[in-house]
Length: 320
Ligand SMILES: [Mn+2]
Image (cartoon, rainbow, N blue to C red; front, side, top):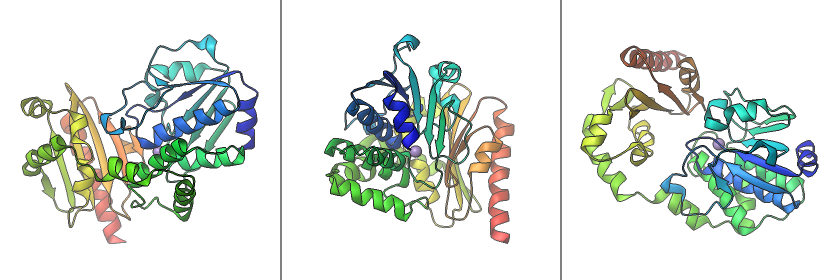
């Protein structure tokens, strides 16, 4: 941590990067580390090669943009919450070829390395917890705004302290952030409780398409179906989290055709069942209870493989 702080202090201008499909943890981590860098009087810009999803726009993220990157403006690049170089999108090659880079993350299955420091703590439920520690180590006072954004990171990555990745450290950081004035109501309402009307209507449509295959529950949503009912991948939101909580389900996934013949898969499992290696086996990644992957070719074969891997995992764990 001290090494990271020193490297930041020695730099003149820093670029911070988050992952595509940014979540609360990504945006919380970016906002907080940007605040830390700024508090040293150092220029900082943040880049994500994607739009900020509507569900997270209840807060503002001033320095986050998706402009083309001008290398000459920066002497240090940092990623937060990015497990895979692929998730840097158009910034991937720039980052991989830059001389001075730092990687800060909490994912288990990952491939991205920094040239100066790779700080990975996969016992942390969120990257926001790591950035919290970093700011405390630097002895900088956290503002209410930053406390709220870090709290969002913790809440989004743990489903409000519900997932098995939650530890005493997660609660400790949550408690400290509340002491610092984090807006609990705002975060819990916007991240956890609120159901957009459209999401609710789409759930009603999707419920009749669910496949119950023993203790595996899944749904395949075609681009055609989405077009017909006028919704996109974003509107489906956390449908997969509802599927995995259906009684007798051990593993659940959603397959969504996000472009023609490009399918995005979200995997979830209940405690004791690990889906991260299933995602890895098919070119994706993530956490043991929440992972994702993409299918770009041989859809039928890959879907069959996915179903088989899920069933194997269920059988293996059940037999122990
Ligand atoms: Mn995260």
